[in-house]
Image 1: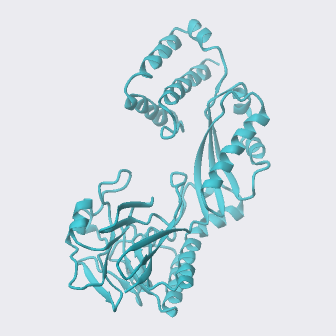
Image 2: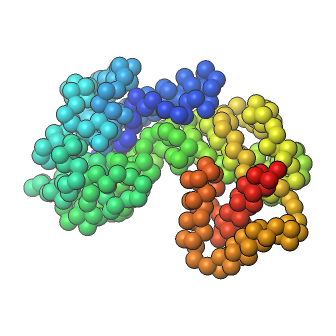
Length: 408
């Protein structure tokens, strides 16, 4: 009964990359970006054929919309034909982006199993597995359809293929909501989930409940590793899941603190170190990076006076060719005598004492103030990777910067 399969989701073929491609204006870069979803899909197909897996599971949002472009559909159809010619079965459900009814998707998967959106269906692969699934449709968006899966009368390995929000994950539409307990109670062996773009094991065994994550980085907010899972099951139903990176490119926003940098070579060195550290820890062919410079430096004013072209020339110099720098946001503050500044400015003195008090206050208070700055001034302070004291200091520095700009 040993078997192996691919679990992938959220390919978003045909993604238009609105607002992203324009930030990386070179023609060849835009071409790479626009074709990246298809390249990730082709890697899945080639890997499945190389490993001779029994089947491939697509857990929804295969295309970015029901009106996907012809190029993407052509690549999808050709890839599915390659899998069929290699005797690899394909099972898929539609997600909220390519929700049923979807004639284009149905036509592409006409020789595969594309699950219906009205009822849960079950298909048996003789001697291998039972796969149950239900596609997404608008009328089921608020329903807990996952709780309706049932183990079939079979000793074979049983898989549920599903697209929805399990456990109320923040930052994602709460489509087809269900709890982890709902899934456990269905008595399946493996849940192949889609909808959440980060990989996540909700349960590692009895059953395995896994979000494979998206196969591609689509913007700077999706800088975590992207790919799919190669799943192997032995005769005793022990499950081994190996993550396989598939995104040919990775978008990221790097927040770089220029601590007391007082020369341009020092600033370049700090930026280079941060970029190379990210590249070393994240696997991709090319990296499209937005830089946010914060912290304090005596070159604060000089940085702000540089043109975008000059900043790109300075910071790209010496970087590997796989690193492409897009937008650069300067959020630094100059090195200055804070105590003298406070003595000369009553508002600044009150502000400083307020933040000094709040360093011992509630953490959400600081985060809320940073959020206000982001909404009102378009700041890019990253509150996730900073210490409590750094958050308070950056929030104060941002307001001081705005004050000094107004009175400059």
